[in-house]
Amino acid sequence: MIKNFTLDYWMDDGWHVGKLREVPGVFSQGETLEKLKINIKDAFAVTLQEVRKLKRVCAN
Image (cartoon, rainbow, N blue to C red; front, side, top):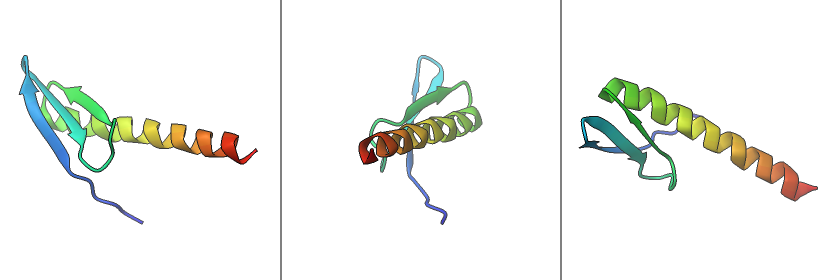
């Protein structure tokens, strides 16, 4: 299943900074908008890994 999220982004001291609107706590930055998009996907992947770990721990 493919899920689309909204990337809210802005400039801060020359960096593209962004967050996923639908996933609180997922932020990243990049020197370009394209790099921000790559980095935000990585940040989301790390968040998913942590959620899966927590689910395993709580299930035991």
